[in-house]
Image: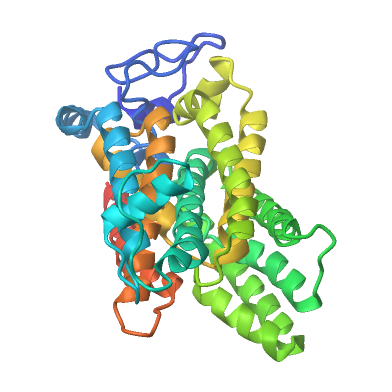
Length: 411
């Protein structure tokens, strides 16, 4: 029995758990093996709910067997991404108009924590450039990318749709309206947390709206989800246009730069405001990983296995709103990170959320750090908008994913 048949042909007798197939669930503890359920596979079969014949079922089983044989073990993938992120952070902190060798970057960190190890930065103003400009920017890129990657993985698991991504379906733009409102009207009731709180509330309302509008008959259709995203993006764009119309010149420049996505305004207080939100969202998402694996089999099988589906979905929506608001509060709209990274992780390690959530967070952080380095170093004394750069890469990937999903839906 394939993943599709599990979703479309639930057990006939109430109270009888779904059968454990070659890659299916083993009981209430979640799916058997580290691979997790096949229902969240990027093939999109589970999303469309289509049925397949015996030949297609045999082919799909053989394909899944080949894919499992090529998968990277979860500890290797997570450890490799973590090591790559550390190396990239050190290198990125040294790149810019004032070049600082990695050895001096490490030496500066060691001296800051009281260890007399390694050389200190020797260039003029290198120490200040490192700790006032570079490190806040790199760390904001890390927490922003981790929040976007985790939010994308969580959204695809909750919506049961591989095309769900905060930037594509309008959640990022909804959060942007909340943050722009704070900028235009100069609200500061909660200090640095005012923008984050406004973005969270607007992002939460947008996520609930998209979820309610795109659900039908217990599942989320890709076309409905994308049409809902188009409508939400249109309304949010119009709202931002109105806010820009009534804003001052300074607020107008801030919103315009913010719409394009940038980490140029990174500061340590901004990092301190975003990091707890991103960390809390990632921790809750990881705690929901086993239940998300079971939910990928379908709502009815999940309920029969003891999952409180509505509570899980509400928790997921809160995590999506929290991570999205944390990501856009100070860096603006950085699209497609939450779409590209979870899919790449699935291709490498399979759809199990116990690997997908932490690996997507690390992969998102790595991608945003690299993209920010390219944005600020590719043109001398100029800086490319970070959101534009990620869209140039993520847009073609989205088209490829959409065609792959539609091709898989054909009989």
